[in-house]
Length: 158
Ligand SMILES: [Zn+2]
Image (cartoon, rainbow, N blue to C red):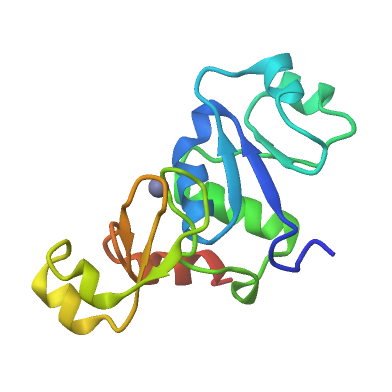
């Protein structure tokens, strides 16, 4: 079942870094390796991952892989392309559950321990926080991306 959360995993081409970051914000496991392209890109990943590419050559040679060919130059439109191609709805996402840098799941962290690490108003207005165990970055709804909720609504508007 593609639409069930957890079963959709991506490998994005190196030129699609911003798209990869957004997919992670939405909660999807998305690998994006710098400098890996063409045949090497196809071979760098197992068939359990959906390839995201803007390269015609990859599109024609990526047989055996599920693949979404990205047309737009705009990262936000690229996200829409992916979601529409796979029939992913808002209910399939888990916002801010994954580190946008490390691509691993974040875990809940005791609010008191992040007191000195986030702005006061953020600490006061957010009941819960998440942390990446690898890079120690702290996440809360709306963190790091301005107007993220509006942008996310845009992804799922028709
Ligand atoms: Zn991290």
